[in-house]
Image 1 (tube, rainbow, N blue to C red):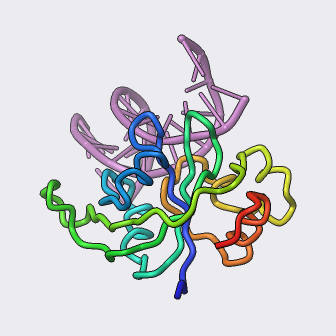
Image 2 (image 1 turned 180 degrees about the horizontal axis):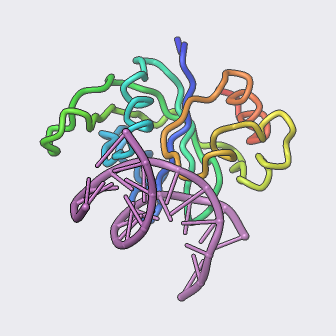
Length: 139
DNA sequence: GCCAACGTTGGC
DNA sequence: GCCAACGTTGGC
């Protein structure tokens, strides 16, 4: 069961929820920011991960699960750059937009709102559950 | 397309 | 070790 809850961003023109759903699971790579990498490294198998579309959409679109924990990116010669595997769990019945998150008192403290450029961040279980509720989705 | 925020790099 | 210059992200 999930003991950690996260949100990751992806620019859908590069890799979208549809792509993840089609592929079933994906190696989540390309994270360069040091803090974001530390968050990736802290993910545990079974943790739930909200997938957010940056640039186009600006909304949470689905939920994934960590299926393989962090290891060094085989394609990057840098030990600090890590990857995890994420598997699609469920598309939100209704995407939850950034504007909506900002307007929710319970959610506007999220790193998504406060640190716009961070691409991997922890969320609390209540925050994740609130987003699922707004997205009319039960796991 | 612009630009604010912020991380990184490199000269001193 | 400071900080200016530069690069990148991502919302608007």
